[in-house]
Length: 314
Ligand code: HMG
Ligand code: MG
Image 1 (cartoon, helix red, strand yellow):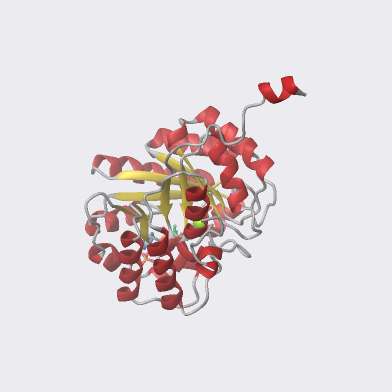
Image 2: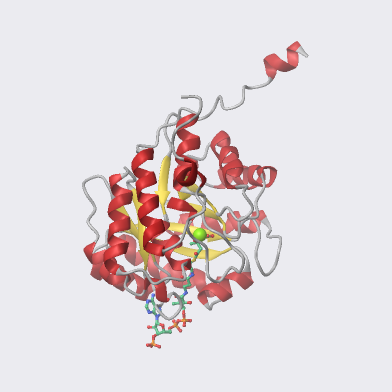
């Protein structure tokens, strides 16, 4: 027993001092809201997120306005949002047409995306995975040549709303392709929030075998309440970037039944409580959550937004 205790590494020994949060509420959040939020209110949300100390914010999406009418004003959002020194705004971008719009709006970073499962890919972007890889090849290279940073997403890594189980080897191979094509970081998406910790450990270990640790992020929707548990597994195994959405807003309109991302304030509370810095001011983040809730006109599911920032231990 004693030998076992001595040999066993302590839990959380390999946790970092600092983690990077990539905020997606103005994009993943608002794309799935019933309400069409005005340009002014979108800019208020972005300002509130920046005021809370978030330095990486996905502010909109240059997809087809016919597919995502909620973000039809993407060009205006990107033109009017103001990033102070040290803050990087990015926007989702599906193809070369999206890149043209990103360049016109002078945004410094785009995020390309595809799914690990054929059916979700087809429903989400109207093309096969092979066709999507070709479209992304035509987007990533020219974006890099124009001086943009490019991030990537692989969706449905933990499961597909149409096909069920997804082969993790196939998902990680696609993440590797996006990295080879020029994405500085690939975010692995639990699009429908179906993942559990042991599954997460398998996916993250495979990802770390294929890509450098800082080239991997986790994007966990919280449909079944397992996002934070999966994130702790990712942290322990070496992941240092996590996507999140204030208030827990979000979801892919082409993934039926998917709820929002892990709430940024819940993630921040967890990290700070573990002694891991984020650069985010939790009280101001809760303020941003209130702005989010007021502009979409409904209560949001974020738990710390409801319970408050104060730890009972403090
Ligand atoms: P399509 O209809 O097959 O496109 O859509 P097309 O290439 O045949 O073109 C049709 C028309 O759309 C043309 O216009 C194009 O110019 C226009 P027309 O000649 O008919 O007037 N078009 C565009 N317009 C504006 N911006 C563009 C653009 N591209 C073409 N970029 C397309 C293909 C990919 C555009 C469409 O399927 C689409 O926009 N899909 C996006 C769906 C989406 O945004 N889903 C949610 C985001 S993904 C997500 O949430 C998951 C994630 O969070 C990670 C996770 O959770 O796992 C990232
Ligand atoms: Mg998402």
